[in-house]
Image (cartoon, rainbow, N blue to C red; front, side, top):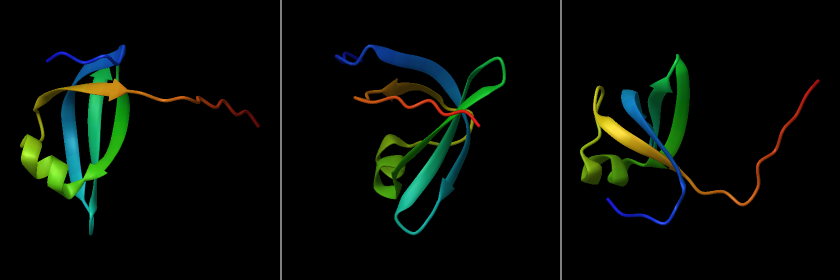
Length: 69
């Protein structure tokens, strides 16, 4: 895989939950940390995503917000 995005985190899929059009893919990236990606059901099917699969979470964002109470 070659990609220009620099924020690539390897992980293992721990769950895929499909909704009407969008799926939530939960990826454990180490030390109990979990990232959740919302992608289309079509993308899940095309990529063949399922639990225990090895994937990369690729993060491309122009803004990161931090909040505290």
